[in-house]
Image (cartoon, rainbow over all chains, first blue to last red; front, side, top):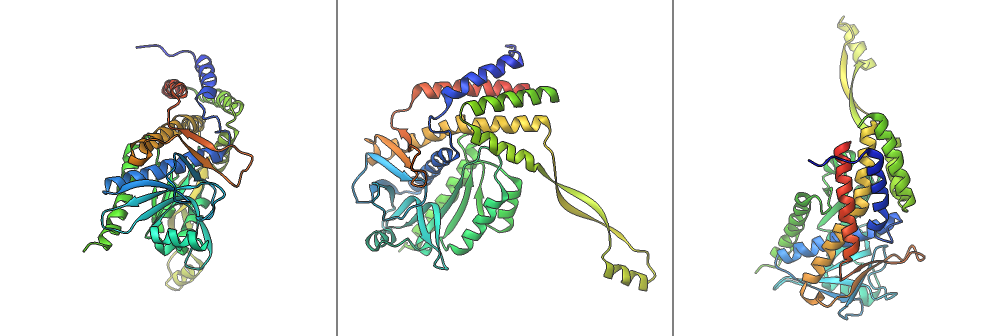
Length: 227
Length: 159
């Protein structure tokens, strides 16, 4: 068995290894959140494919992208400030769905909220782009609040999510985080809200659970249109 | 590792992370440490005034009962160090794996075979460059991440 180096040596080695291992832009908290949101969207795409969908990508002008531009701070679904990309999810014999990152969505009260990830009907997406209005939450089947935290997440984030869910009428609202917090989990469970944590590549069981849950939502959507 | 060694290691690692531009990570950890860990406590309390009055009428001695309340207590030096190491892992190893996952999925999806890159744009921070995930994996950085992962694993065995 190899002997471990003395503690100061090990710490010096770690210190030297941090810089080269870092994503260059990861010097702000928001950069971590951006990668996390893209990761969660990828899991949703995965679930859609597993449920039998064909996934393609489109830019806001309808073109097929080779450079995918996703917004990670909220913006309007119709915005042409950049060639923003969204995914199109097509199940056989079922109306098209669209998956967007960082878009505004209007709630039951008429207030406009932010959704980190929103899966909505294609007709609603089209309507919004044509009329420059945010999508209505009841036309969405999945809304996801993504939280990337290096350390434990705070209870306030869960409280805000509970408030958000009370105004959104998406079929499913998920609170997805890479971090853990017993208080957050207790509150969301008590409030009967869907949460998944810690969602990260090192916890395949949790990722699988989230994927299955999303897959169930797609299954329900498909069933609505079954002959 | 003794409590003193944990404190020494925490300080060194925190310093190294700040130097590498991860002050936002060490700040998040510090905030959690300040709050402490949540625990439930069992307390013995006297009955409410109305209950005591009722008990007096029935000539019974006021009863005490046990209630459970939430409280916080400080993290131990070992817990503090483990929290910092996990935070470092999340921002290096986990982020690299997430990037790879995004890359793999996009490549697998039929129409995305010829994709070049993903840019994650944040309009609320116009001065910050977009986070970019390129279609071709950055092999060198992934190797560096694996190296750091090994070191952190060895370090965790020491705690």
